[in-house]
Image 1 (cartoon, rainbow over the protein chains, first blue to last red):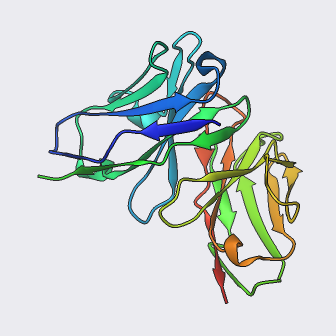
Image 2: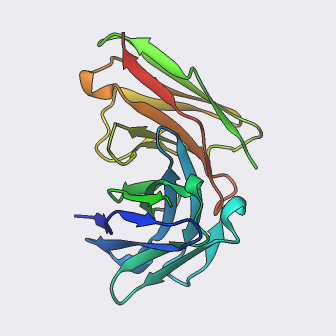
Image 3: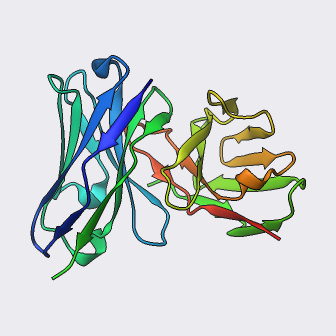
Length: 117
Length: 108
């Protein structure tokens, strides 16, 4: 069965970086890309970007373009999302989701990232 | 950027009632619209993709309709487990996407 298992919660200081992982299993990794979505406390969903596992192509939400990098490691079937220069308003639960053509069909459990001095 | 506006923000209904949720786009997204359900403390769950296609395992009481700028998610008879927040997402200019602000379906 398809599973996406994310890394554990993180606490970071303003200005630091965080790298969240998403370990995939139960399907052919390179047949599907990944999206990353975040959700600030009590708020809605925010789409952050996408990465192709086939060729590494990425596309990021404009507001995050200068601070975000998405990568994948096909040898470990893991996707990564790194966010730099963290601010307090980056405090959120971060989700990875498998991209199946025109839908995000499987989601990770979420990773809470708290940015606090 | 394509903006999605969901209405109402909150829908107060009783089990067994019909729920009608709206999602309006600032410009045409053709049929590239998906709906997700989210319960507290859980990840979103795909319900509908390409405006009207139910995802695997989604009960028939959930249906989606619309194209262009106006979309509807209908739950024909609310079950207790359906009380949650629902989000629409447009994917017409993939690999860019945006979400609507969400509609909370609460027990009346």
